[in-house]
Image (tube, rainbow, N blue to C red):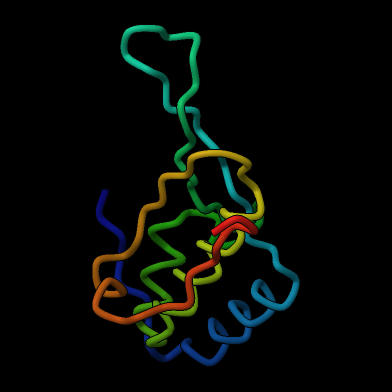
Length: 114
């Protein structure tokens, strides 16, 4: 899927919208079960997928991450998604991360036992 590059002239408006999404914790997490190959009934973990507010320009993850890249806030968006995912899931969790954020040490949520 190709995402059109955001218009940098509208960056202040887009930054305000992203700030509102962050302030309201409007990121949604969709958990998809990962099943054991030998037994399709047994869920062994979950993949967490970010969704923006319904109907917002950033409901689509590619659009949210494209604008975050334009505004140089990829690390913040990735961290928010990770934090929301750990709250939403009780069990083994598989996370996707933006490749550019892998070079930055981000605060990692830990379970109460670890």
